[in-house]
Image (cartoon, rainbow, N blue to C red; front, side, top):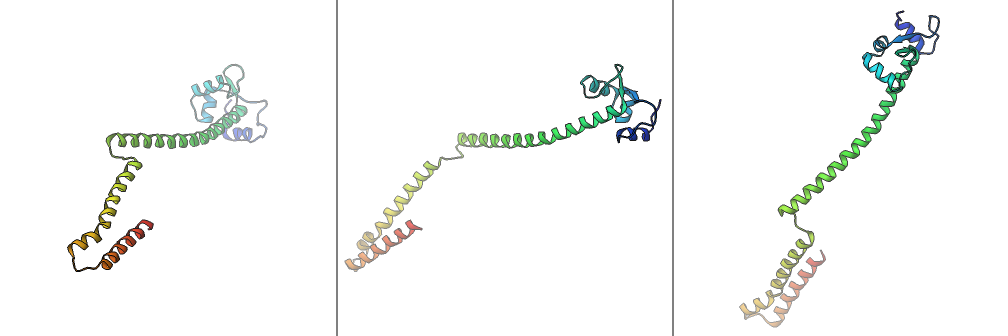
Length: 167
């Protein structure tokens, strides 16, 4: 018996089939209705996803509903899989960044912050010492300046260093 689309629609949407009894179809017929190969129909039946009767025959309405439920379940699973895939991608990026940082350290492209701080502290100590030596050097080269003038220069240099330290 061949089933028309109207007959299948009536069965899927809960209406009674126009023929007597529940229609039973072969894997090839069910495959036509679902748009999949008969081999896939057999596999779904073997896995218990599609109900079977008489070994390799399928009740049309129940099989279509079961296949729809199966498709919806797969779609929900893909949503969860997408979230899991996003988390895996985030983890992979973090691991790649960690490896890149380690490689940059090995190549000497990255310097530990403590080492940079020590170097800058040494440079700034040298600048401070040079600035504090300015008043005495000025006093040696400019004999006409009074001790009061030298003290004023010293105070200005110290004030400038203090202000720079607080900024």
